[in-house]
Image 1 (cartoon, rainbow, N blue to C red):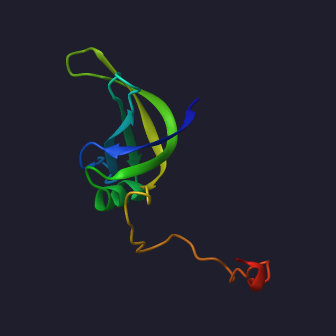
Image 2 (cartoon, helix red, strand yellow):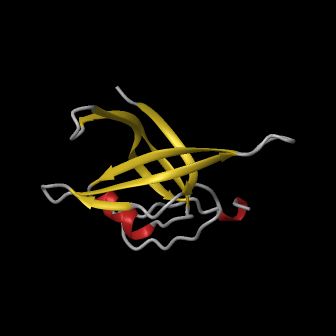
Length: 131
């Protein structure tokens, strides 16, 4: 079972791109979300680890960089593995379904898309009344 989550924050480092034994791309990133302090209280930053696999991982690594403000949608998942020393490692992270730059603070150039609309969408209102 997983829990959906949306996080808006800044990349703390360039995404880390690796490949599995089967050649699938994987990306891991750290996202910092800062809650502003009130009056004399300091700002508090929470760090989230997020990961993606496949085409989205390659797109992340080729597009996003340290300092970019991003919007991430995914699911919180917990993974565990056996460490070389015999102990068990665990991590809770965001499995990324969708990610993009926050266009309030970034600009973006869209270079490709996955699907095309089957027909031209026409407005349903009279253009004279649009504004």
